[in-house]
Length: 440
Image 1 (tube, rainbow, N blue to C red):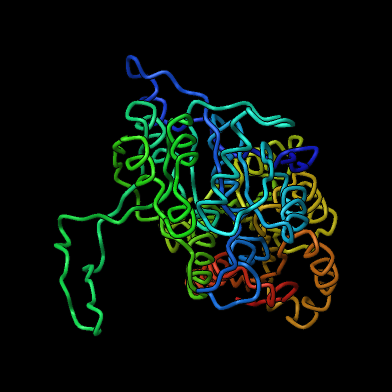
Image 2 (image 1 turned 45 degrees about the vertical axis):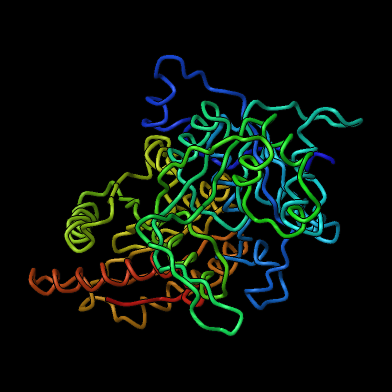
């Protein structure tokens, strides 16, 4: 087992150390936070998905699925080490993912021929009893699936603290469908009462000595055909797992359609905040504030923030630090190439777009009576070339022209249309619209 190579710097603000509810849980008398590591089996071939690429390496928004799962674990900074178990043929691909997306605290171990054998290899890397083992043995070890990217830190901490107290713990969810058993001739043998049973989910956590002992004593049959880690702790160590109610987001990406569902969830999550970059010119600022009010009204479920490209760009730096992935740059009635480049350089230097595509919409207000639309669009053709350039850095740049008539009612209609276009550009994150000049 060797440590995977991480980048020289981490992505901006990888997440809070422990969330509010988590801190309250740690603060309870007698509940000291144990040392924690995680094992992430990622040796599957994705047979049920029906694609050549193993599902953990399938791209979502051009980023491998396993990278999102690693990011979720890294947000819990109290998880000191993460062991990813991969096949020898995918080791190079995994090392490349670690470097490209700047994952920290990640090491690699070689997968076995079955899930349980892979997990056992991951535990061996943490056991500290083998020559060349560099990782310290944790008190508690998390076992999670590489294809469950939507893990909530509060649930993770509840499972870890329950494992510390009971020896083993795991997340569970209510059954969606009734479980039935078929007879040898393909007829119904019996069914289970759905209300009395639960679906076992991930993450699961164990006192390290408990689960390592269980795997050491495990039969060849269980290693080859078993799927439930909690059952091994019960069978071989007589340790009854504490079950913790999990969130609906713990589902597993299994089929091809699940990739589309996961992409929709990710897009929704990174579209919840919009930063409006205002100009300080009084006339142009007025138009920007009018658009801001329309956006707040039309996009009531989205947080709208505003700042100016001035005062050392502290406003924009603050939004970048807070990991806002959507920027609407209000350029009044001029085409300020320098200011646009300045904003894009700040985004590129921040490494914000390493993890998710960043949407930048340049908005220009146009007096359609004074300047023909065709003339204005021609003057903005430089945006197309710039958009191609920054797309390589995962920044999706497009342009929106808003006709700015004297009639207030007509202006409101145009702004409402602009709000719809902006919302679509941010939510869809369609690379096909990069460099397009749109009109409202």
